[in-house]
Amino acid sequence: MPHRHRTESLTSPRRILAARHGDEALQLRMQGYQFQEIASMTHYWRGATGAYEAVKAALARVPQHSAQEYRSLNLERLDHARKANWQAVEAGKHQGIASELAIQERESRYLGLDAPVRQQIATDVHILIEIVPSPALPALGGPAAGKVVEGVVGSVAKGALGAPRPTPSREEA
Image (cartoon, rainbow, N blue to C red; front, side):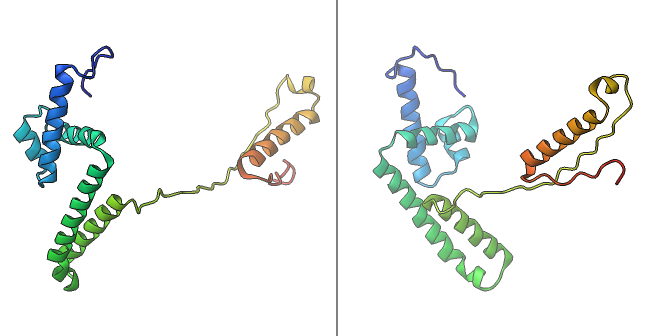
């Protein structure tokens, strides 16, 4: 990330130059150049990553209608790619099918069709507690110590999984 001073003016020569380079990079991208090519043409010292970040920053400055133009242009390109590739898809060629899937994925991102995937994870927790004789146990009241341990097991199971499962006593196990 470039070093920016908080006191630097929005109209500083460095920022104006960066904005101009970003606009140039955006124009090249709209003409179909790859980020590595843009980096070479505009002399971005960070290569393709720098060109990508410049295009992204330029897009953020672009009015919404221009961004929509950019999306429309790219959707049109995807349609051309699909038409050029369609015979390979119909013939069942693996490369054609892979290309079609990539086109669909990109198109879906441009159109905002991909919703975030929600995942629900469930798990079982089994706790084994072994009571070891200790000089402190008689001070706790003997059997009361077992009840405290069972209560802890019940609340952990209830908090994590809903209703507590019956815990077998030492005699049942």
